[in-house]
Image (cartoon, rainbow, N blue to C red; front, side, top):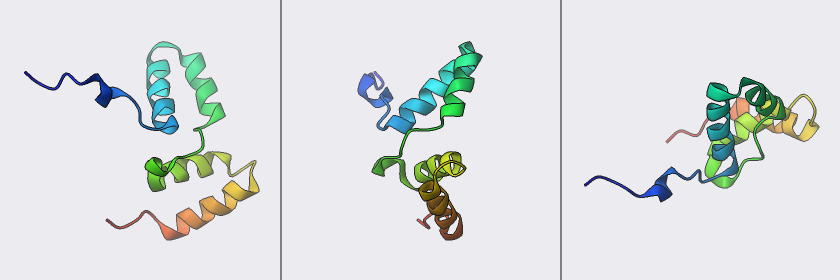
Length: 82
């Protein structure tokens, strides 16, 4: 009778958990959502892939030279062709 597996709903990475929290706080606690946005996403894990690295580096590029260099590299390479 349908999929009742709660395990599927658990975020697999810290970035996925951050995005889930952000969506929740956007709806119910806008001040907390603003604080999360200002903090930016947590460092990506392998499972976050290209877009996880892109989001992290884009947010931190202004304050972290390593992130800025990685962000420029990611922009020039573009997402992987699958």
